[in-house]
Length: 75
Image (cartoon, rainbow, N blue to C red; front, side, top):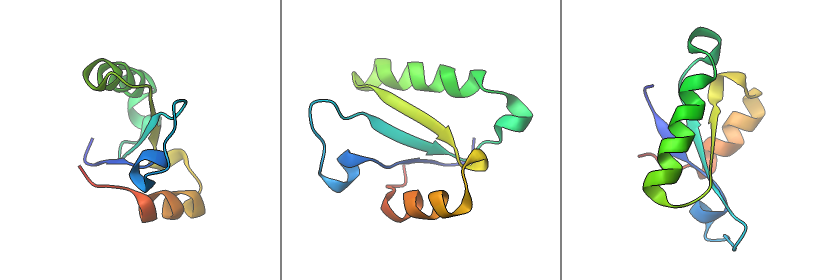
């Protein structure tokens, strides 16, 4: 995994009680499978104490990735 970028309602300051934190990761699930993303989501939820979604940029459409990266916060 080379890069993780949180992007969500929270990064825009629009979060509410039902909001989660979305992470876009630079890992190709076609090569490593989904289990590493599931493990990462579980670990992030434990550390952050918040609901988390993790998605691979390699399975999203280009226009979706561009939109997400426009509001992402690099970590």
